Amino acid sequence: MLNVMLILVILLALVFDLINGFHDTANAIATSVSTRVLSPRAAIIMAAGLNFIGALVNTSVAKTISSGFVNGSLEQYVIIAALLAGIIWDLITWCLGIPSSSSHALIGGLVGASIVYASSTDKIIWSGVLDKVVIPLFTSPVVGFIFGYLIMSLLFVVCRPFSQRFVNKWFSKLQMVSAAFMAYSHGSNDAQKSMGIITLALVSGGVLSQDAGIPLWVKLACAIAMALGTSLGGWKIIKTIGINMIRLQPIGGFAAETGAALIIHIMTAFGAPVSTTHVISASIMGVGASKRLSAVRWSLARNIVVAWVITIPATMLLGAAITLILKQIF
Image (cartoon, rainbow, N blue to C red):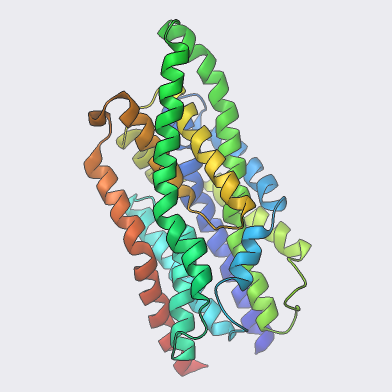
């Protein structure tokens, strides 16, 4: 039974990674597609390749997920509940075309499931949740907005002597570089969530020691699942982020992607499972605000922010409810 449950955890984690690929990668390539610098097909191929590479180069976020939020081991059904909560939330927000955080969905599900499993909050490492999740939840969008605003404002000054045609020509090329950086940064942070949850399951199942690190086959499996998910695309969210919220020119897309990628890269180095969705959305808002406040469709931005705020409590409830059901079975 243990082996069957462990295999189910691994399969669900890879499904979560697959969904994360077409759900969150849309954020990484939305600006490049909306400015027509890259065709949807080319953007997806590029993002899939760089997500795969990014997923293999760093494991600090995976270690945070596997050991930074929950004390000790868990029953496999608790991890299954966490994954199901994340998957359900991702599919709901994808159907609605609302960019939400897969990272926070998974972590919220894990926290809610662990609380019900232990019938207390003792299992939760609250300092880790606060430092790695709650604080970045509020600070990363603010920093993303500031980075987008400042980079765009600087580019306005630098490019003022040049014609619009000249600027578009060069930033169409430069945005390919920023889109690649964004896709790589996304892979280096987001694919690690599933690596971490699989490692947590392996440790809880006694297959792996606590300090063994992330096995190579786990890295490869998650990287492949993320790349495959990316290849499926996420057009509803691309439309929301890249078109509906603000009309971008290549220079604006470059500013938003560069600012967001830098933040994600920095947070990955600190092992923080930051939300790609939060950062790129806020960076795009900052780019729009640097032109004029009315350039951003704030009603849509408000809906996105509401989704950010409710993701963790909603998935905590989902994780808790699913654990209550599975607890009766197992």
